[in-house]
Length: 288
Image 1: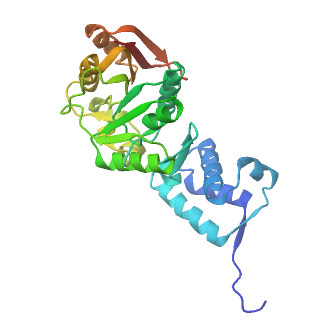
Image 2: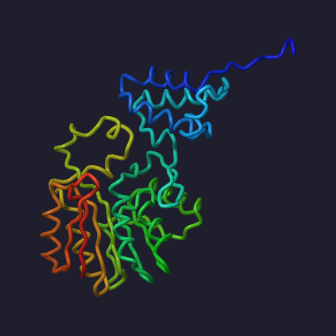
């Protein structure tokens, strides 16, 4: 009809080239391709399979506008996970933002390792819960469990609580600092933590994208003792765990043998180190 505004349109295959053209200076071709598929899946509802079937599919100018906003965020080095804003892990839809670390594959592996023990009817404490990933996964998949999640960041706890509400999972999240809060004696059957473990000596080795957008206090240990979190958690776990209770950690592979020795010092038994999918020693467990 004459006089009506006609929206501009673009073919999907052309938009793919557009993404590569805008981001090639900071992402390689394979990364640009991953980003393209994530963008169309999350903001257009078009799966990779649907794209491959119909590359000529037309997207409207209003949709392109939204996508270009996301591309501009990526050009500023904002992590893709924050730009997308959510991720499904173990059947749970997690909201993600810069209040907490982006979930890493190693943390998902840690959850899988815990779940492989098929523990039921237990009380769990997640120290440094962040987005609530570990606490919510264990609550959802460990039968008859009671789960507490501690963090010293109000922003992180608000995100964790939002994820719990969004997924209708009941976890007791509390604002606690492990250095200033005692854990009651014989209170838990399992304590798990993915604490800060990167030394500021390695600051320059960390990608600028991580340092700029992710909470640095959840990454770097602001102390001369790189193992300070492990020492205080293990010391308190030796008192607060029930008999035969478990402690699980994610670790830096450079320091995991030291964590092993700390567990031995506090007379933990059945200490085991586990490699991640890259073959690196990144996880450790022990029993009281």
